[in-house]
View 1 (cartoon, rainbow, N blue to C red):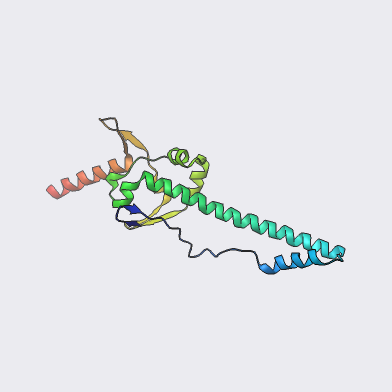
View 2 (cartoon, rainbow, N blue to C red):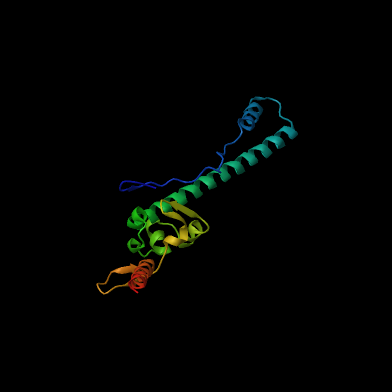
Amino acid sequence: NHDGKELILTLNSRNTPELRINRNYRNIIEDYTKSKKKSKKQKETIQFIKSKIDSAKWFIDALRQRQETLLHTMHAIMKHQYDYLLTGDETKFRPMKLKDIAKVTELDISTISRVSNSKYVQTEFGTFPLKYFFSEGLINESGEEVSTKEIKQILMDIIEKERSEE
């Protein structure tokens, strides 16, 4: 989405519930620490609850980290493909490889590949797989790197023009 000349990125969190640890489990642990007599069974129960709380915290943190990585990657892609994302004009598409985004984000290429796999971006001019924004490039006569998507669009425009002249 864009507002004048600024691109705006939002995650579709509609189907993602807010995860948090039930307060009742924390209360059980607090009550246990206050009690003076602690049976073996209570100790085992509390250890079990603590391990499950730790697992839940790890899971929630992992999901948060995943979202942050996706946002960080998307911001880098948006910056790289700014002109294209602002207009939808494929002739403004810049060559972009996984290693380009990995370098900017300081993430591993395998992480960028995993993040961009089976994710989609909804724009004002269509919904695209995230991998769509990656393309190889060729060097033109003036030494600039040109996206193969841009070349394809230019060729399609030429063919369309020739067809209309027939």
